[in-house]
Length: 320
Image (tube, rainbow, N blue to C red):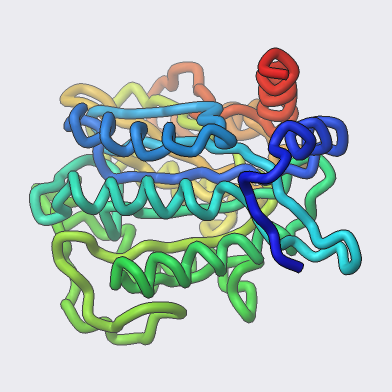
């Protein structure tokens, strides 16, 4: 079935709003201090009017920003297979703008990264399924590898065997600081990768790094400040709270420096309805108390899918 995205957009928006055939995308970029670079990335997104940036979270200490995008998916009426989403063009345009404005070799920050564009994850919203998110993730991976010549690693539903994000990052040395003991700077791995990426060249452009792209159910990010400047203690607590360290199931955690006089534990809640923020806050509080430390109240860095959907529908309804 041929599809012209400029045809009858009002009808498509109405159908999208009523049926909630939507995908979300979280796009993580390793920059937050260069405002001109962020402006160019956001201008690239604004060229596509059917995309909504629902949220922008930036952290100057970590030197990274996350954009949360939402748009519709069009399906073939006879097969019900996805055939088009404006997210494909928009994400590619934002990634290209990021590569033009940011040089990884000049980057440093307190958050781990493997590339100018560190992570892109697609999530089903409303009535969409994980298969649609994986379909779009693989399309974007192919675009980035072919058009921008950057190695791409796929994860979870976008990967043939469902390899997890943290497993790929562990293999690539993501969690090892390479600057001043607690910071990440530039590209620290060999230019020729030891393992083949899922898409793109094995030779890594040092100015861009690599990108990891996946599809998964919605993940919440929740950070808990620790009242200590000793990041080694914070990392020890993070290991104990994470599932990998025998702590809370479906929780991934890393201890990071967050300013000159503080640290915090950044957590991925893979199944927030199973193990939520309150449980994580309490467990970190107990572990910190064992170390003689206090914790501050944690904070989400993103919205829940229910909040995203409600906000999106209000915007679409207003525009209509």
